[in-house]
Amino acid sequence: MASSTVRPADQDRDRDRDRDREQHPDQDRRPERDAARRLLDSSARLSYDPATEVDWDTPLDQDFHGMSPEWCSLYGTGYWQEMTEAQRKELTRQEAASVASTGIWFEMILQQMVLRDMYAKDPTDPRFQWALTEIADECRHSIMFGRAAAKLGAPAYRPPRPVLELGRLFKTVAVGEAAYASILVAEEVLDVMQRDWMRDERVVPFIRTINNIHVVEESRHMKFAREETRARLRAAGPLRRRVQALVVSIASYFIVTSMIHRDVYANAGLDVERALAEAKANEHHKSLMRSSCAGLMEFLSSAGLLTRPAVAVFRRAHLI
Image (cartoon, rainbow, N blue to C red):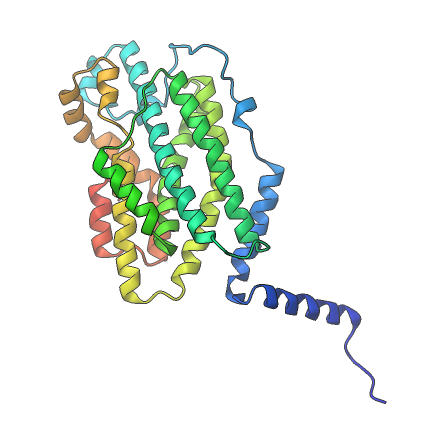
C-alpha cells in the first residue's frame, strides 16, 4: 500500500487554488484582485459621510477664500494686483465652485464607464465589489460638490455644449485603458490642488473638510485606476497603445480646460474679456498645472501612453 506524501495543509491550499482558478479563469488578474481586496479593507476602515461630516449649516463666511489664492487662474497677473481683496476672495469661491461642477460632470462619466466595464462580470470578484464601492463613493462626492457650489453662492457651471456632447460620446464608447487612464488624469489633477486647499487656513473651513474627504477616498480610486490601466495594456500592441495614448490625452485636454468656466469672472464682478486674456497668458497657473501632473506623466510614460502626439496635446493643455 503506497503512502501519501501530501500533507493536509497542502491539500487544502491546492483545493483553494483550484477553486480560485475555476471561479476566476483569468489568473493573470490575481494581482489586481489582491489590490482590490486591500482597497475594500481600506474603505471599510476609513470612509466618510459628507452629509454628517461637513458643516452645511453655518452661514458662508465671506472673509475666507474658496481655494488657495495661488491656484486662482488670475493669481500673479496684473489684473490680480488691481483687484480688491473682496474680489479676490469672491473669484476663488466662484472658481472652486466651477472646479466642483466639472468634477460632478466627470464623475458621472466615470460612473457610467465603470458600470459598463463591470456589466455581467463575476460579482464574487473583489474587483467587481470594489468598482461598485467606488461608484458609491462618487455618488456621495457629486452630491457633496453640488451642495458645496450652492453654499459658495455659485450657479451651475457646465462645460460648453460641444464638450458636454463629446463627454456623452466618450462615456459611451471608452473602454479599457482609455477609460481608466482618463479617470486617473481627472483624479490626479484634482488631488494635487485639493491637498493644498485642505491645509490652507485661508480657505473656508467647510471646503477644507470637503477636500480632505475627497483626497482620502480618491487616493483609493487612483490606485484602482493605475492597476486597471496597467492590466489592460499587458496585451496591447503598438498600434492600440498609440491610439489609446492619443485618446487619453484628448480627454485630458477637455477635462482640464473645462475646469474654470468663463462666467466665474462676471460673477466676481470682473471684466470677462480682460480676465480671459490674462488667465490664458498666466505662466504662474500653467507652471502649477505642470508641476501637479509630474507624477501622472511619469506613470503614463511608464505605461507607454506618452507618445509624441499625446505629448503635443498634453503640452497644449499645459500638463507637461
